[in-house]
Amino acid sequence: MSARTATAVVTGASSGIGAATARRLAEAGYRVLLTARREDRVEALAAELTASGHEASAYALDVTDRAAVDAFAASLDGEVGVLVNNAGGALGADPVASADPADWRTMFEVNVLGVLNITQALLPALTASGDGTVVVLSSTAGLSTYEGGGGYVVAKHGAHVIAETLRLELCGDPVRVIEIAPGMVKTDEFATTRFRGDQEKAAKVYAGVAEPLTADDVAETIAWAVSRPAHVNIDLLVVRPRAQASNSKVHREL
Ligand code: 8X3
Image: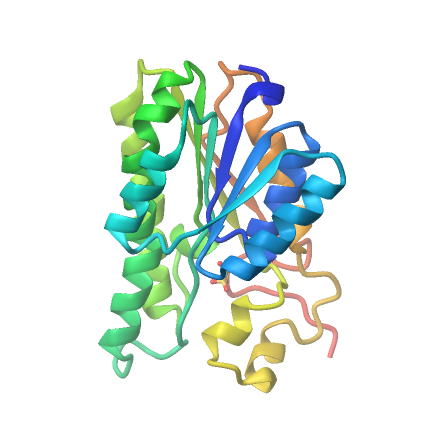
């Protein structure tokens, strides 16, 4: 399937890596379908992409709402070439000893069940395309832990395991499963959401780091992985800034 004929669905496309990925895939020739809870944001980005000659549309969607996800899947006419599971996020950085179970539940809902919901719902359309690609945007937090990682680390390990398991289960079907695991990425919202709007705490995440990854660095990586020939599967790609050697080893110029 060529990019020119393929539809790419991106979740969490209202900002950050999701929005940047929608842009990159549109530029690569995909018909992009932007989904996110914030309808005004995805509408605006879809309009902008359409105005610059790309094929783009928007759909308000909360991936944790299974009925809404099923309705979205039923609204699609035809095949889907690419699904980018980007919707996700962190809440809190508390130690296991004192973390709020409600935060853990929220993170599990979006980072794990959200991926499950939309992947299940779109698998028939991805398979029907004859050359489908599921991207799971996990995190380096899905591969190893760090103090205060808590429920985010747990949830992203879940996303990582979904990708690994699905790849095993789909072996022989015309659908590949790509996992992209970014490390430190400076986006408008990730750290601010994690620290519930506390800008000072959010800024500390990136303090002294010369060049954290940008949303577009990750989007470019996703677009590259997705655009490999159909028989080439980038199982797992870890991408970090040069200043970060592990989850807890970061070079800061302070
Ligand atoms: C984000 C990476 O290190 O903040 O997925 O958990 S980290």
